[in-house]
Length: 406
Image 1 (tube, helix red, strand yellow):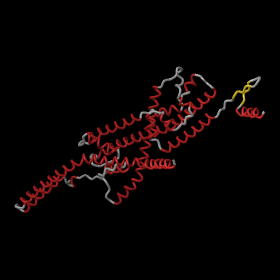
Image 2 (cartoon, one colour):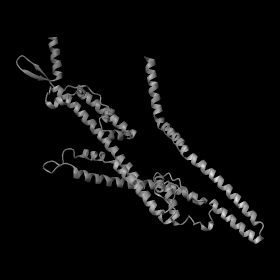
Image 3 (tube, one colour):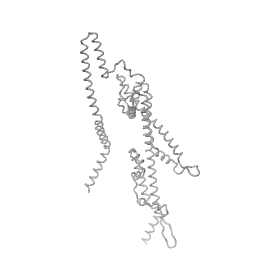
Image 4 (cartoon, helix red, strand yellow):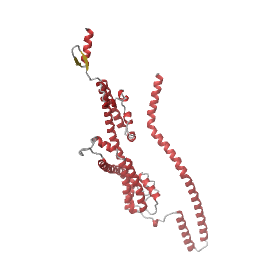
């Protein structure tokens, strides 16, 4: 028996120890699977591209060698000019850019683009400081700009969340049924109604709006950049919204830097709005769980009182189910298990601190309910020779002792 208990405790300890590591193991597995998938897709194309590049380079070297050999048999001045033209043509074929045709990046538009990529942590890498002063200033600017951008996105997301809730409340108010006197709404219009409204808010609709915004921005990007097709624009939008920022696809038209930045900021604000609404729904769910715990406790206490009173009314028979006749042990998992699947999913992502608070509250209420059900406050009736006298429990015990000694 001792060995079995020790083994059980060891298994539970291992489970508690492995549970925090499980998400890390899942991430490692996800990384390995993704690596194999991208290797299978991209490696053949890379090998083929390298082979073509090698063949092209060898062909160009042969052409330039033959051309330079022909130039040696001419007059020095003509040979020089011909060799210069041959080398410039070779540069163009290799993709080398003539500095005379390169526009400076560090104008006001390029600098604005760089600042935007710093505090949004996108970091395309197409423009970057090369001086020590610029690099030091970038570090300092990031320390200040990144928290400021997060605060701005959270504030904008909270504002949009309040706006969405207000619109949703108007929709519910327009569709809610009212009582016959048209003065008051039907039951459940207090604070619980606000919680139900918050929990009933369609987050999926907000997510769909965010996805639609991504597709709309992709279409707008194709209008701004002539060389981009829709697939390229969609790829750029997703890489930017997720702040990955590979830098392989970036806007080339400087005058569209600010409009593109505004569109991306609105998209990031929509993502912040989704997270804000989900957080508020979790808070509303926490209050709803407390109310459900209180309702279950009241129901259990009422059933116990009806059993003590011998109430055989239809309502009592309806409540006297096998579950309530037992001294049921109320637990948080039981309470949450009776909720809808959507609320259970919200409970899964609820912070552990909130779960522990609800668990302690549920345990406290269950203890109070059990004590209330085990106490018999109903006075007993004792029949005396000439009358029926109602006595309390203590009086009954005193009378029994007196009759025993007599």
